[in-house]
Each structure stands twice: as C-alpha cells, then as structure tokens.
Image (cartoon, rainbow over all chains, first blue to last red; front, side, top):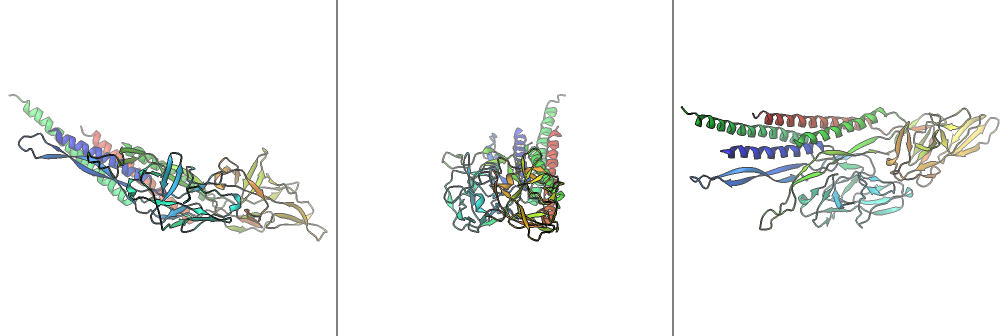
Length: 243
Length: 261
C-alpha cells in the first residue's frame, strides 16, 4: 500500500534534483566554457512481498548519472588579445593550487608579474610544462592557430592542449575548472583562435522545455501521492465503520 | 529547493552584467575609456554520486557520477585595453596615444595617477594640465609668448616664440606602461592608480620600444562598440528572464507540495 506513496516520493526527489541541474545550466548561460548537464535516471527494482505473485517487482526511481553535453559552445568574438577559444577537441592545462586542472574557458589575463593566468589567477601551462611570462619589452602578444605564442621577442612557447580517453570522467571543480585522475593525451592537431572565447553550450530553449516537463512530471507524481493518501484514508474510514 | 537559490545566483550575475553594459554605453563618448566585460564561472559542485566510485562487487565503476552545481558567480569584470578610434580635434593640447602606455598625472595629494585621456590644456601659469587641472608629469611649461606648440610622435614638446623663427624645446613627455593594464585601479575621471595587480609602471619616451607613439590634435575615443553592447544587453536580459522563470517554476513545484494536504 505504501509503495505507491514511496514510488511517488522517489520520483519527486529525483525531479527536484533534475530541477537543480536545469537551474544550474540556466544560471551558467553566460559562463565561458561551461558545458550543460542532464541527469540520467534508472529504475531501482524491488520485489513485492506478496505471495501470490512472487515475480512482481515495483520500480523506484534513482538518479544514475549525469550526461554532460560535450558539444562546442558558440565562439564569441571579444577582440581581447588574451582570450583564446579552442576549436575542436582539447582542454587548457591550468596550474591550480590544488593540482593540475583543465578548462575550456580561455578568458585569460596577465597578472602583476606578467604571467598568463585564468580569471582566478592560476597560471596557464605551456606544452613544456611551464607558464608564460611577458615583460614590457614583449609588446603585442600573438597566438597563432596552432597555439604558439609569440611576441616582439620571438616565440614564447606553445599552449598545452590535452584530451582524455573518457572525457565524461572529468569532474567539475567549480570556477569552470575540471579535475581528473585520467592520463592526459596531448592533442595533435591543436586549433585555437585568439580574440574569442567559447561561450556556454547551454541551449535555452531545451532547458526551458525541460523545466516545463519537470514541473508537469512533479505535478503528476504529486497526484500519485495524493491519490494513495486518499485511498488510505478511505480504507481507514470504511474499515473502521462498525454498524 | 536548491533550484531557487541557483536561479537567484543566475539573476544576480545577469544583473551585474547589465550594470557593466550600461556603464559601457554611458561612457561611449568618454575620451580614453576602455570597455569592460563581466565574465562568469560556475560555482562549486555537490557530489551526490562520485565519479569513479565502485558500483558493484565485480569492480565496475560509475562512469559519470551525479554532480549538482550551485549556480554561477562573477569571475571578473575585465577591462579590455583595445585601442580606441582616433578622433581629430585640431586642438594643440589634445594628445592621443597610439599603442601601449599611459600619461602620468600628479594628483593634488601628490600621488601618481595614470590616464589615456589626452584632452589637456594649459593652466594660468602655462603648465600642461588635465581637464581637472592636475599637472601632467614630467611638468611642461609653455611660455606665455609662444605662438605655436608642436608635440611630435616621440613626445618632444617644441614652441615657437613670437619674434623667433626657430622652435625651442621646452620638454619631453613620458609614458608609463604596465605589465597588466587590466589590473589598474580605476579612480573615475578617466584616471587610474597603480595596484598590486597591475605591477609597477615602467616609464619611457613615446615611440620607443614597448611604448605607443603620440599624435597631436587627436583624441582617443572610447573603444565601446555600440552594436556589441546592445547584443550583449539582449542576451543578458533574456538570460535574466529565464532565470526568473526558473524561480517561478520552482515556486509552483513547492506550492504543489504544500497543497498535498
């Protein structure tokens, strides 16, 4: 009897989580390098206790995993010489205090020491494993299509781009950074664009329709809870009627 | 419900975005103004099911866990130092910098400030000053009997005095360059202060290595691009609306729950 209630509840809990994920996608609609996510649900089967039908199962809902849309975001031209967008595969390597992090957000800056850093001030790593430092004598910074950075003083090294066997195993660490224990694979055909950033790949229309369907599913799950509550109440009042 | 606060972070971020855009548009005809851009980052994630955790006795692992993000935050409001257009003014004391560098200005407090707005004039004593009357460093005094002032690309200031044919040199302008000009601390009035993020200035004469050249009779206009600001405004406004919708939807879900009984 309570199973219907509980199934309805698991559904509602999963939907609330889905709503949070949609809200996070919408909140990050203007976040450079952000990748949209979608939860995946699975049935959680459990045997009913009835003796008449031992093979009957009931299914609860459980969130199973997330699907990250790895599609490329729009290229937004900013004309900022330190903005770099990756076209095609790969991630920038960032030397964060907690260890190496990866990102597709190429909105870089220079810090007081002239190092090329992310918005949080973490150095961007070159293919040689060091950072980039520019002085006043370097003048204009040019980044060619293959990631080579050159200034008036000549080539300064190449931006390191890496990829992974299982890109979905990368875990989001906040600040548009990703972390993983997976081995890195250097990208062979590096293709970057200076003066542009990859914007978020969240598709507003998709998210809005998801939002509406989650809302409706939540309402229908609510109906199940409501109905089973009503059934119980009826049962109690009918059974308790003694005349 | 989490989605309420997540959508709220989204609305706050877009509000800031609109504020930055409106400041850019308001300063569209401010000499030497550099446009700003708000950039955002996702907030931390809550691990509901960790990536790579074991999912069975056979040693299979979860390929993609469940991570719920907490919304968005502003990473930075970056100043984009792209060169503005050069506007011809034919005023002898209007100077535009083409390339890197800032004019050094002495504030009344004695501190140094930096600017790219070269709309200078002379004070009662003939000193080269900004529109606010602050002296341009190194100080240059134009003699009162000067009939013509010429400032070349290298910053050499020469005057022709009345009754003389040969121009005389009265001073040499200098520029200051920063490692990270985006990190300068804005004071308003087109002025900036050195900060820990900008690094210390290196000074040099215009048109030398690493410094821009000067152009007399021109002013550098703001580098705000009206079309891109308006399109940014449209995206920001729509994103704000969508986040607001999210709050309404969450509210409806909550009301469904509270109407259960």
